[in-house]
Amino acid sequence: MPKNINQIIQKLENLKRTINPILANEALVFFQDNFRRQGFLDKSLENWKARKPSASRNKGRGILIDSGALRNSLRVVKVNNKSFVIGTNIKYAAIHNQGGKIDARVSVKGHTRRGRTGRQKVKAHNRKMNLTIPQRKFLGSSYTLRKELEKLFIEEIQDCFK
Image (cartoon, rainbow, N blue to C red):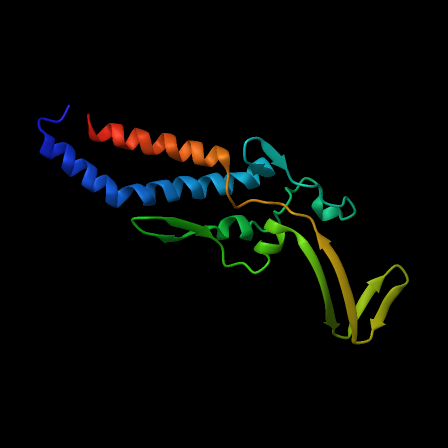
């Protein structure tokens, strides 16, 4: 137990400056763990929709994990005395996190393709893309995270009185 009230006040003042970075790092690890869990943990685990099994390169690989760039791009973007923000700068993160449709025209450059019958020339052309990306939420409001952060916050305050 601290010797006097001034020590307690000093510890609480220090905690005021350090608590949000501590909580932000805890949240960052929680969101990165969603990739290991292959789903979003709210009150319970909301598993991500499985990928189409057609591509052989997908066998044994986690959903939303190709190079690991998306998971590794998660950062504490902003932290101050009142709040913190976790985010990413990867363009395709939002469509995976929220789901949605992509309706676009794509320009395909001329190239040579190797097929079963040998090499084939492909002329430059435009192709219309209609994709529906299922929501695979990895970042957002979570009941479990909120409870973990509350518990950590209480532990840090209790440490000030030791």
